[in-house]
Image (cartoon, rainbow, N blue to C red; front, side, top):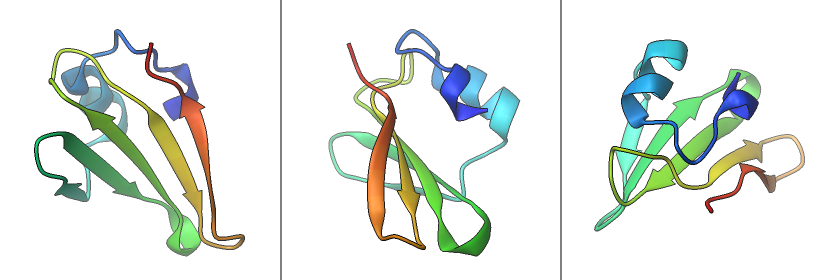
Length: 72
């Protein structure tokens, strides 16, 4: 689901497709976090709500983070 987004996708569009994030962290930049099964998570960082920045997946099993969508 998160792979379908592009940097021009607004945060409202993400919320409409994925639901409200489980957490909002960050200071100066919005970072929205969606918790996934087994402790994994997806986070989206963005300076504005009009478009998204990097979309990252944290795999709790491996402890690794990968970028799903890269900011332009």
